[in-house]
Image (cartoon, rainbow, N blue to C red):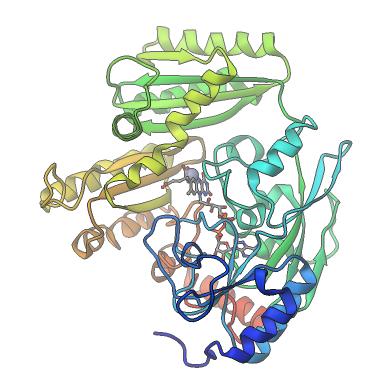
Length: 482
Ligand code: FAD
Ligand code: 2HG
Ligand code: ZN
């Protein structure tokens, strides 16, 4: 239910924001006002699963504007949803009711880059791919990469503590983000854009903002440690007979490739069949394999890296860990092999909807859950080839090197019976194995009711105390997180 403590948007409020930002930075609902831009894309999430009813979208260009907006909203009890690229997968970036959307897209300047230290300082609204291209021109790399790079913003990435495809190599944003500039709900500007790798002077408050999903403040800028870009990047795509073999391949990759291993991704055969059927992608290997792995190395010496990779491939082929494999021989082939992994998410939406789960589970047991759920869906008569079955398939893939499974259930329509058969069953399954109900996508709206499977009562109480301290009126991203 909409919380009655929040005010409803009035003409007076709109007038204040238009005077503050100018009318082209305040997008209004076309039903009630003259629309300068369609408001619908700001109200609907990427999956088209969640839809809010904001009547106003604000696009500030400076931290001072963000501060003035929040101060006014806090004083007038207007609820606000911070929004970056709106690629989040848990319903966190769109309103639940009529919250005002504060979108960061106009704050998109790179502020500085130091080629000696590799530290980048940039506005929160810079698109991830834009930041990475900027760094590529300077022989550096953004320490995060993910399929939504063309749309997601670095502020959104930090707010969700996104993991992505190379966490195995570059670690979590909790390690690489050095500083944060944020605006608190009462309008206070928190300047903590440290350029220091080491700084032991009290509580590390910026860490609270990393993964806080817009609940305690709006991130307006970040400073981040960026590694040198590796001149030698190799990618191999392997076909395997079983999940058991995929685990052996991972062990061998760590042993043979050591410090140059930069990604180890697992895709089941069903995901590969789906990308071929839905997007017409030509699969790199002949025939069907039950499992596939994508292995990437990044190093500084082409000959040295190639030799290591050859030894790895010889080992896994000779010992029959891997049934078949292909090594990219050009930049285009590198991109083609990565497409087989990165385009899965987009293709799974083909039939209408997807139930998505993003779980941390001990590697050895990761794929057991996919098989268990497939059996459950079949037994309940929900999975089948015809229209009267809501479930199209049950697939598993993900960041195997990080013990992060993406279990996806593509459906012909969102259906309460399917949802009830999945939840909380698979959260209980995960909790029993000491896993996490969200490895990287966060809580948002989808996982709010289930946080208890991953956090104790004491931890939830502490989280609520932090929320109340930063946002006593509860105006920032209400109804979500915990
Ligand atoms: P949004 O979706 O706009 O917002 C996400 C959350 O952060 C919301 O709660 C919002 O309120 C808050 N927020 C956004 N910006 C700010 C800000 N400046 N200040 C405060 N709060 C803010 N995620 C992964 O972790 N790993 C992946 O590999 C991955 N791959 C993806 C692939 C695809 C194809 C898609 C569609 C999504 C993928 N995601 C992945 C999920 C998503 O892209 C990431 O979570 C991303 O970090 C969200 O960034 P965004 O700018 O789109 O944020
Ligand atoms: C990925 O790793 C993303 O591709 C998205 O985290 C996963 O769609 C998903 O479930
Ligand atoms: Zn992922």
